[in-house]
Image (cartoon, rainbow, N blue to C red; front, top):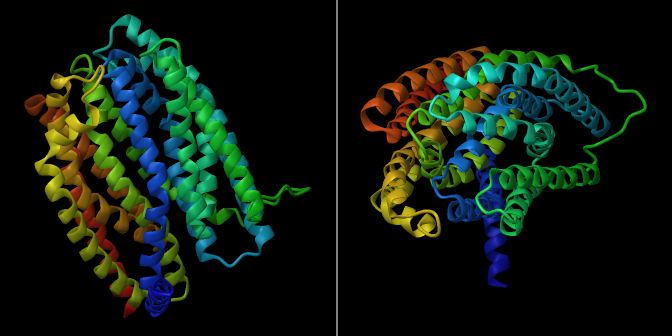
Length: 449
């Protein structure tokens, strides 16, 4: 059969080098994530037709960002540390399962401690974080935060579960399971009796996340990555805890970035938060497919190569991957940036999303399209630095990048409106891509000598 011969030749080609194997797994990861990313984008089209650039959508988007602050701070650090640990260490299946269970319980306990403190502090911060909201709109925002509390814990577990799947190379499940949440959101929105109500978005997100958690539990159990030991062992957890603590300063600043962006947009009038979100949707979806593939395959790949002492080959991989990611990103964004307005109109302009909304969103989308090549290279550099255990330096770079982005977003938004926030993100992504690449390259050169 011709197809069988093609597959056989491809497998032979891939087997000749670890880098080709990594590229193959990245391709598999990107392909399997297409369904979930596609469903998520369909969900955004449905949301656009129902909500447009309404205040109800502003409320949900800001609440979604704010409830996720403690979650993002902790999970970005712990998930990276867990993947690095499971990929770079040889453990028996029962030990791997025990590390996952112990990590999950400790993380959820920390989230439970942080949540009441965060909810207590938020009302005092909302006059600054949502300065453009009316009193009624701000009260609705506080209510939306409580509606999203179950999502806070469910998503915490889901992120750790996906970290295990990524570390063990189970990219099919990792790519397909996230489609459950957008499917549920679409169904709930279509069935909700009051169109344009933020409560429909909040309720559907919680239900979808719960179903996703259940599917993830079953998958982990079937693959032997979930165990219920009689006595929980925390031996060996010091490596995960130490790496997580080193990454925390960076994740604190990284989490602050969308909060700052939403706060700046909230001060710019009705629908500004929604316009910023719509402008980010398609670039984020396209970027997310490749970034997800690179992010979930690069860290285990580099951790394994460095664990074997092959730093010279890691350097070769870094150079080659950087070239192809930058070149591919430029080729991807060229036609998209030219037809940005037409794309917005085609995707969103129906129902509550009118021509005026298209005019507001198109320049924002254009700026985010320009970010894609730099975001891909920055992701590669950050994952390699994590594999090199340069966690404190990664945190420092991230902190400076977020601070610089906040300053640029504030200054550029004063002159160019909401699109200035997007251009700030693009400029900082370019800087972060350059500095992480050269840092990783210099470190690998020293290790190779």
